[in-house]
Length: 291
Image (tube, rainbow, N blue to C red; front, side):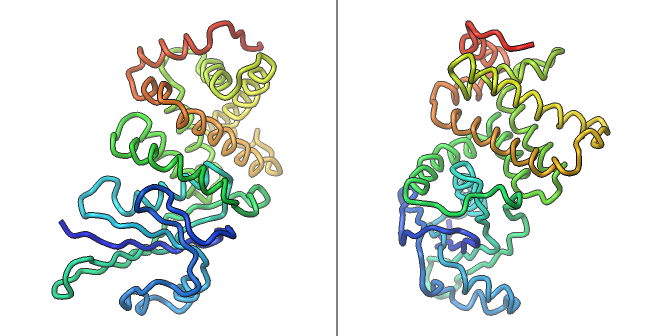
């Protein structure tokens, strides 16, 4: 199978560091000049070339064709790992793949990335530090494993990514809510808001007081989701819409962090509804949610 050197320039990524190996062979590098792209950038529009010239950091890794995750998925998973660490503006506009084979017959590729991470104005982190980059590196291999497995949590990953890409607040919020539900649900019975809010609270908090706070927050956010789904968007004041979306992003980020840090959670949540219910019931033992 053909092997490629893959390069993805990161726009709006602020980090004072020069180089970090997020996982073996997967690098985040500061470059004063862009890498040698064998002329792949020559066919881009002038504004695209300017964008690539102005970025400071690049994702760089090798990828073999037909390998999972795909090159596109690797870039998205790295961006998602950054997003899980902080609500960043970082996004990639292009991906360059340089054939590692002999010069004769090389098939180099350029991809414009039209699905790009969006962000809520005023709700982003200013910059990354070394600890943030290390945290992203801890998330990345687990995210890649979920992607390879193509199980239940991969569905939640796809929905999370789609929410991160969307420029429509309703779409982004619905995708975030669906991602949370894909992580938390184990039953189609009535009382879904209370059930999801309880499971969320018991995952992200430990003390009764903190769990009550988390329960009320998730219930309120899920209520906004229901308003959108049922044609009652007018119940979400226009002045509150972006802040509500940012809050749902924070809730989903908190949920993913807990799940990705626990092998027990990963194993249970990739299981059947019965396995999930057994795990959640044990996890929620002793907690009575507020009315």
